[in-house]
Length: 269
Length: 269
DNA sequence: CTGGTGTCTCCCCCAGGGGGAGAGTCCAGA
DNA sequence: TCTGGACTCTCCCCCTGGGGGAGACACCAG
Image 1 (tube, rainbow over the protein chains, first blue to last red):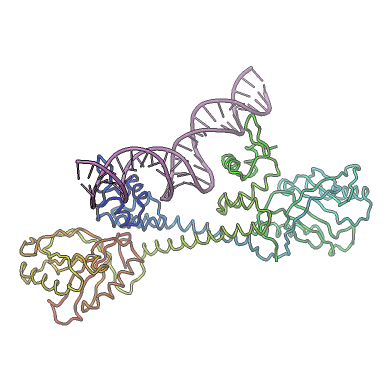
Image 2 (image 1 turned 90 degrees about the vertical axis):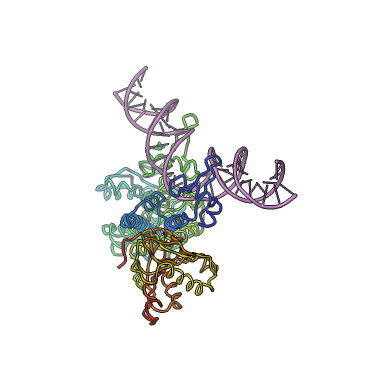
């Protein structure tokens, strides 16, 4: 007869674990002294303990270990073990996905388009803001831009105009839209008013050409961000570097598209 | 201001989980009503909640999520994320090993030697048993066999003789050794006595030739068993199918070697 | 004002252990 | 036979990241 300590040293299972296996009906001591409660094992139980140890090393749940030990037919045992194998392989796939996802987060894949991560500071601008249906965007845009120009004057070197597009605009076809022009001291005139744009981290790419083709660039940027960065809710930002106000040649137009992200890596190639 | 229920629907995080994140200091509500205890969130907190959600999907521990959110520099964040990546890859390796180990358990690799899994029933035999030093095995064996033959007569069709070798014999050079011959009614004479051999599951292979070369076969069988089955403590068994008693041609000798295992698969090719 | 729905805190549950307290037991040496 | 040290017992709390449910308030529209 072996005490629990001796049995523990022989099987490399901790005393605590042996007690738990006893409670769980996995490995009953050969004898339990009724008065002292001391557990006594026999050398015959070492093999069973070893089998349990091996199965636990393979992460087989205790309940399954119990059933495997209880199964009399090798076929039943094989079935239980292969059940566990299936679970383990599913787990393996899940972890593999997480690993590659993390890896892309740290070293994003080269995009088919040039993407840059940029920290946009808080800034106060002259802006027009409205709740708009997506089919009305074109006309609303022209009107808002005209009002901005009227309020600020046509020429400025404070920077190009820009816009903020609520996600609902794309999802529900209806949402908030904000058009702005940078201005050191934004006036309040008509619908134009000073607005503080919050600081934000953006994944930025530049769309070339007419704005009608922008949805393709949007799709590319969007799928890149979902795969390679931590997306964050918030309005998409556009900045009109070169537009119809600058030249009639639509192939020369340049629109920056900025997608809000949570920044993990410092920079992108 | 959003109630916890609204915020839960917006972020796809359960109310319970949001409360836990609050307790854990991961995501503090913008306002907690002092009298009612109600938590109130703002839309600004949705991005943070989304980042937490993504990181948790990637199994980043809550403590790390907290540190990632707290880190101001992208570099620090990247360091924390890559720490997690390392852990996950280690986990991946571990699981991979477990999977292939289980797979071998279910479909053992073809062995360089022929291995068969066999259930040996309990049997009572005529046996001589002793504690022996390994260098004395040869002489002890000859004497014991002579005594068995004297007790049972030289001819029998009850089956070939066999032996049980305690593991300590190989490990410490000293251990119990048992030599037997099957017998329907085992006599008691001199050192010969009836012994009940317990039932056991064995991985069995056959060694060809002189017993001096058996250690190689032992090694092969042993490593096969460790890799492809669940080893179990217990004496190794030999059975002398063809031996010096049958023929002088040592190349014709056949010794079965049986290694105790816990049986998972039904059979081996 | 009232009822339904939302939210609060508190406790228990899962797996598979680990840490530690306080009390009782075993056994060898004096 | 006693004593002291090593061993073992049970019981409770802790970790991971949630989920279930009870009972008591809070909120808001009719």
